[in-house]
Image 1: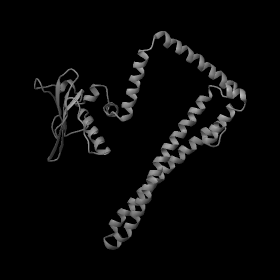
Image 2 (image 1 turned 180 degrees about the horizontal axis):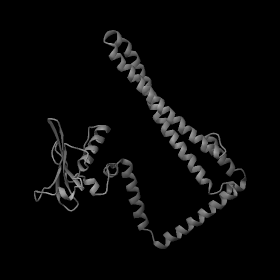
Image 3 (image 1 turned 180 degrees about the vertical axis):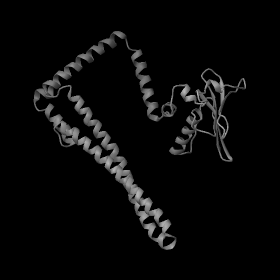
Image 4 (image 1 turned 135 degrees about the vertical axis):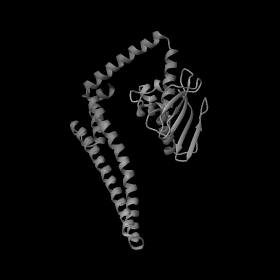
Length: 279
């Protein structure tokens, strides 16, 4: 399916965006604006956006206009035949939801609609690998597979003899997962901490002159703002401490106290002899 046109009504204002049949590039806007446009596109297909209309072309070549007027019945019209085909897309309650007909919800549709740089790189690398494998002689390919299996078995045997059994991978994976979670939460908490410091200081400083020069009601707005900022910062800090404790618990199960100490312990254990280093 392709979008051809999007129309958004906001009180007396109307915004219209026409899409090129092959590619439309929207530049000069920020992340929030792009997110908003994506939300409106998905809302035009679902039942959640009154005042958002769209014209789309299905994979079959049929063109449809989706009308969602304020205070009126939502409809789907076949543009080529100028006929009302709402019954094809309506549920038992008469709600027009094209996403539900396709077996999607808003969250799934958003993931499919958005293409990030990471997605493009992953897809390109995958296609390149497939092309390279397709050009390899099948006999050579299967021979390489057998060598990989044999090498993997040899590595596992060497790890067992060095005191690192294959089941240790589950422990390592759990610790790495907890550590990644902690670092992610810590980064968010640090951002909130800086924002809350400046925001809280500004609100606290603005409350005093507002109470003196304007009114106490205005000053209370700044006080409440400072309290909200502080509360959000406190919640983020609690999340960080919870993630830190989860990482420490996972490390304790492996007999380590710190993340760095855990890896040093593993390396030292596997390289404690010349034989282990050679294996």
